[in-house]
Structures are given as C-alpha cells and as structure tokens.
Image (cartoon, rainbow, N blue to C red):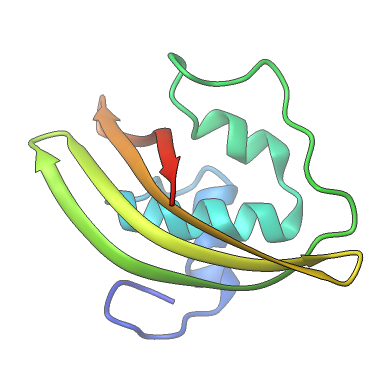
Length: 121
C-alpha cells in the first residue's frame, strides 16, 4: 500500500526497494518496506536500511511469526532530513497475538532514508 492508501503489488512497491532498484522516497515508504521485509524474513534489507549509528551487528527474527498487518498512524517531517512514523504492527507467534506500537525516528543521508530508533508505546 502506498501513502495514499492504494494497494500495490509487491513488485511495484517494496520489491523494488528490497532489490535495491529504488530507495524509499520518504520515511513512511521506508517503514512500509521494512514491515514487508519482516514479513518476508529479509534480514539483509532490514540491516542495510538501519542507520549505522544504531544498527545491530546481527538481527534474529522471531521464529514462526505470522505477520497480520501494519497500520501507519502518523508520518511527520521533524526537520529537513528527519521524520517520525507512528505505527502499529500485528503478528502472531505460537498462537499468541503481539501488537507492536512504536514511534520510529528516521534520517535521510545522501538522499536515502534510514531507520534510526523508536519508542515502544
């Protein structure tokens, strides 16, 4: 789905970002592509889109997670090259429902957006 609520095929949306063919044009689009990367288990994409100042050396995804949806609650620019995205991601692990509500911070460097960190709500 794009920022205007239009549903796009994976190849037209996140697939291009995941393949390195088109960087996300804004923080909200990057957030959506990162969610898709979690769904697909694309750890290399998650790491490359994580800002170097906060990026972990490795990332282990929740084994057996079944992703159920992403809701973007708010996207706002906080500066010329910084933004925040508030989201709720829902998934199940071993039948247990999990709801991750986060206010994430992003930065743009050399024309590319990166996830920096976030506050869990």
